[in-house]
Length: 362
View 1 (tube, rainbow, N blue to C red):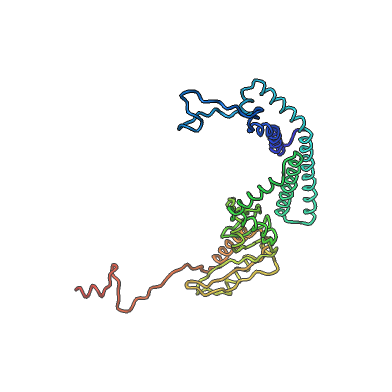
View 2 (view 1 turned 90 degrees about the vertical axis):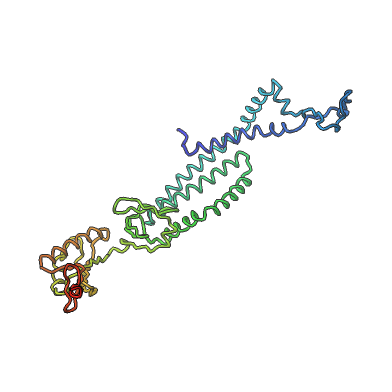
């Protein structure tokens, strides 16, 4: 069976660690000086015309002899190094195999636990976003534990590595406070559940259907089929309108008629226009109410109840068109904003100039 791609990086790290463990003793010995001969070092007398050691500006100092220099210039050193590497690799092979077995066991454990977790959460009718995030967290936790156990099998000090990772994580957390804020906000959304995947919502003046709820951001698809990606931190600080959370939704269509028209006749015409529409409920019944006496019109509102809240936009367009056609057929005027200018008596306007001004000029 071919090795999964996910296990390739850990295996490469294991092989590099094995090579480092084999070469570490040799590198350590290379830094040690050669032992001095018995009887102490021989002191050389300076030749005639030469200054004694310590005298003069630039005394001559022979290079220090070390095992490293001896190994480099020794023709038999490199074959010996290769043999030592092979021997140590063979000695380290059982630990490497044990680490690979641990990784394989934890990978199988992750697949089993993920499958069981999805089935359990599906039976509890948990939110799909919560199922996905729970599966991801479980995967990362199990695989991380498997990597730690495998590294421990290789004889590497795991405690020091975990301490370094903790320090790095603290530094990254302080530098990425916004990302942590979005993470906490994502968990808050999953816990509070103001909306679910598939709901029609309005968030930060953006209307659309929720496609994905992540730990960092939420993706909403607008009616123009554009994906709006909103950070979770901004979402929880905004006003959220969930259009589909309640199965019963009332739709209000604002209208206006002229002051000379009878509001009772307009109400009758509008109710007959929407009666028995396929997108509307029969109970509660539609209503037409007067909401305001505006400057140029009497403001009305046609209130209907939808069979399916997901048809909000379609029902809105259908109700506006039906109301316009019904009012036109009944001869009820739909006014537009206009102003009437009343001039004082004796004042005439001729070609844009006041008549009083013309008489004064004469």
